[in-house]
Structures are given as C-alpha cells and as structure tokens.
Image (cartoon, rainbow, N blue to C red; front, top):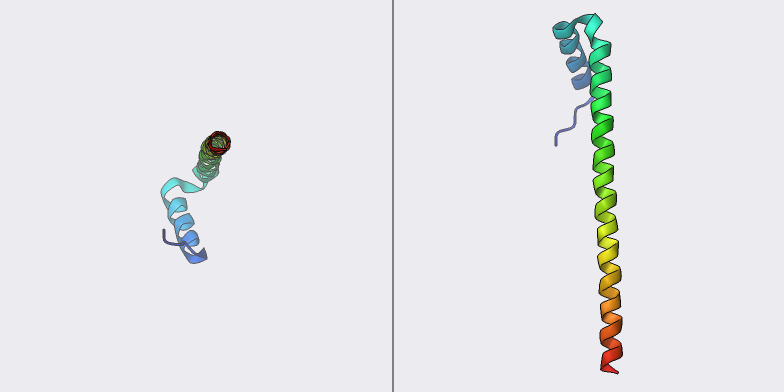
Length: 73
C-alpha cells in the first residue's frame, strides 16, 4: 500500500475543498471519521474473536496431548 505523505494529503484536501466547498467539508470530515471509527471497532471485534478461538483451540490441543501421554504410561 503506497504511503501518502504531507504533500499528498494537502493536495487531497485542496481537491476536496474545490469539489465540496467549505460548507460541506466539516460534514464530510465527520462522516469519514465516524466511518473509520466503526470500521476500526468492527475489525477489533473480529480480531478479539479470532484470538479467543485460537486460545481455546490451543487449550484443547494441550489437554489432548496430556491425555494421550497419560494413556501411554
């Protein structure tokens, strides 16, 4: 993913200002911020669920290994 530097951000802001005008720009910024916040929270939720499932699987695998070792004794 290419990095957007400061000059790129300034160019994007100037283009947005020309397209949407100064009155709509704060509303647009709020909408983009809210969308990014929702996206971030849902991806965090997915990561938490995935981590929990992996930890559960590891615990089950460890119990299986312990049981098999006890059977071999």
